[in-house]
Length: 425
Figure 1 (spheres, rainbow, N blue to C red):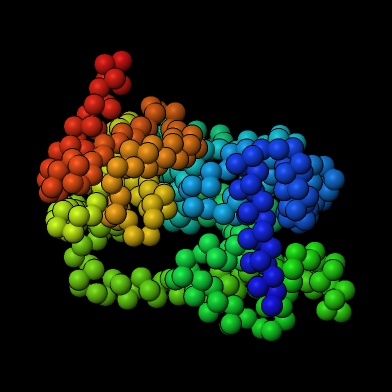
Figure 2: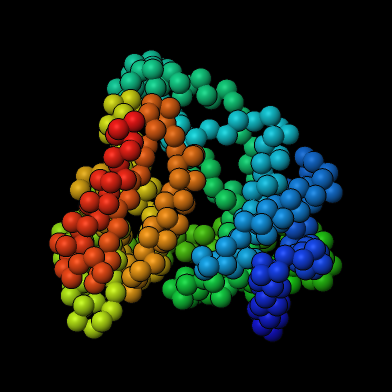
């Protein structure tokens, strides 16, 4: 029943946002703000303690207004999900600024993790503190890069207590992710929904009830404690414990699925061993098949070629492993930027091929949207040793060609045209 009410309320709120986007009247904006006031306060409560709650709520409203001004309904993401991340992000930025902390770029965090790991390994092996030269040789980078990492260790970064630490030291709070998924469950893919429901069934009844009250009914921890007759500390413990359990269950299921997939000889022959996406041979074969199908059925298919510039500078300063990590992150980001039916493949040593079945004349607009997302993502990935740049080329069948080879030629030509101004400069 709670889930049905949540879906109904979400639908009404989304319709209200769409009305405001079509006719941005002040009264409609006020209605949207009033409706999402509970969500803003709920998110702000997670970070209360170091700063007054009222201040965090006001910062959260700034995030809500930013979400309302930047929201694009054509992307396919619900406003509730979009606003959740912008509100939490605005509060995190406020706390970081107040604490006078410095957020290091992702490449530095990744390298710092490798340096720390190598330092611990060498210290156990040598029974002494390793030198910077020894650490650099172990990681496979220059000594100056190690010195830069060690200098950065003196800065401190603020993070939510429920953040799941990753190799880069960054990440969204598990509460943020679960809140977005549960409050907009209709936006979660069928596969992820089944996985989440299966994981929820493995929790205790009390754990499921606390999660539902917190996420579906938007109750705070004090209200949940009063309703269930337990202490606030116990509610907090249950929330954290249940999230940890869910994460372990879902990670285990994903790991088992990967093992099964790796055991399949058919899948193993078409996957790139480094990036885990489809390899170049499969890309060209599948594109030819999709082009033939599109032409014979009067349908459409498009391809986007992505070529990355600047990796040689990254490789020379930080080593080959950093380049591999960057390509792996790039593949994952491109895959997240596409629909479920689209294919992300490797194309050459520094590029990707994206196949978009059913996409035709609007391919250039889709390419622009992906490129904009990539440019925003790259802001956190700049190396300081020369900028990384993504170049895009595109083509669609049957307008630009009737076969896979023809589409690749047209996309390559547009890719070269896009690169020409940069090379001339």
